[in-house]
Amino acid sequence: MKITMPDQLPISRRYDALMGLDVKRKAVPPLPASSRPRVLCATRYAALGASSRLRLAQYLPYLRGAGLDVTQRAFLSDSYLTALYKGQSRLRASASAYLRAFGAPWAARRHDLLWIEKEYLPWLPYWVERLAIGRTPYILDLDDAWSLRYEQASSALIRRLFGDKFGKLVRGAALTVTANETLYRWAQAQGAARVLHLPTVIDLAHYHPTPPPDGVFTIGWIGTPLTATYLAQIAAPLRQLAAEAPLKLRIIGAPAAQVEGVACENLPWSEATEAKLIGECHAGIMPLPDDDWANGKSGYKLIQYMAMARPAIGSAVGANNQIILHGQTGYLTHAPQDWLNTLRALRDNPAHAQAMGHAARARVEQTYCLDVTAPLLIDSINAILDNIAAHKARNGLVAPAG
Image 1 (cartoon, rainbow, N blue to C red):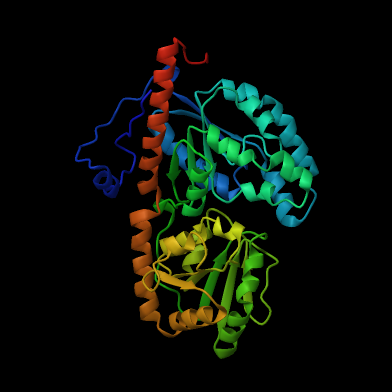
Image 2: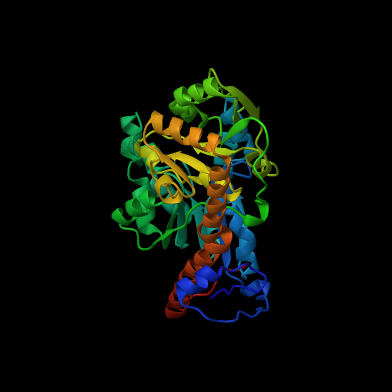
């Protein structure tokens, strides 16, 4: 059941060096459809969900090109996130999701491997999820510290019923994939059989750096209405900068977010325009509080800024500390004065900012793109499929019928 990387799939030379390979890859004829390993990609959200789109869905063409028969099944529809971001009721969308969940056990049985984003059945007890998964081996993918949603819930009943759900899921997984080192260490402590650190990365084909724009110094931020609240962390230094010289804060994806005393430009998010909108800024920011949830975040927006050759400035929290090379690809901040000093330095020295942006882009190409991470993921899936095939051979089992 081993899958192979075909010629047309971008493979990083860095990966070859890392794995000690010195080979010429040849195109491999696709496997017959009947013999391809079947993988169910069980995402939490549909296309609007950034985590589902970036952690799983953007890898699907790579996996299919490598010989896998991959199906995506989203638990929550786009209508759920649309309602969430608008502050509307999510009852109808949630009810539809749980009605569809009755088909989850059947879907699991029809596949050789599950690739689960967070949970197969959110907000249902572990034993229900375990019954739905059945005997199908699974990969568990974690982009944030989702266990905290249960462990630190205000309801004692929720904590009792769900508190150890993620720990049990990790212990039962053939592989746990984590977006950052905080989650990696947590999964190991939970007793995970195998853990792969796979950052949330970009597709270089969608990010084409452009020269910094002329005109007013523009700071970019991209996210959702839920994470826009973090901008309040740096409201004071932004107001100070705005008082010194013309300044614009471009907010992408949070239409109602504002910082009082700062000229804000709110733009809608779309996958087609996000890179272009970032490229029209001079720098990108990611303020965070230093709490348990923020320490488990993936830092993806920093990678987006860097991919467009823009310096990234982020709070020295969690994955930000690994993504940003302080003073080379951007700046790590510890206090409001750090934000003021670093943004002022970038505003007042465009040549320095541009050089830092070039270094940021190079770092993304070396570490934070699909060309680097896709081979690592496929190598890990190969190992799981080999184990499944060996288990079936030992026990005289056959693949599930199509």
